[in-house]
Length: 55
Image 1: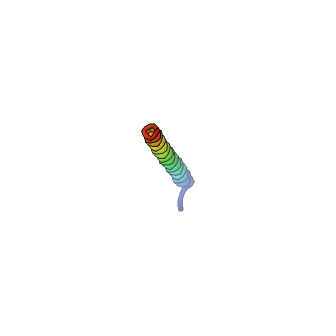
Image 2: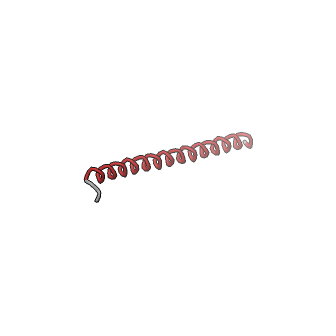
Image 3: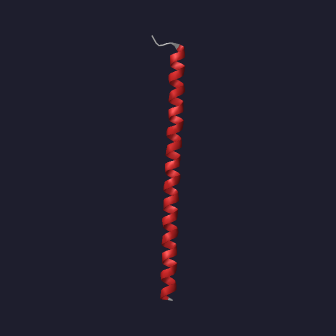
């Protein structure tokens, strides 16, 4: 039979794992948003340069 102490330890590890998993997911999303923003900025710069050349 599993003791109460063992159950608490397992629950604590589960919470810690869930916290780090959520943190990692959050960081991945921030990284993705940053990359998309950088690409949009680059496209906007390229378009501006192109329009300046055309005009």
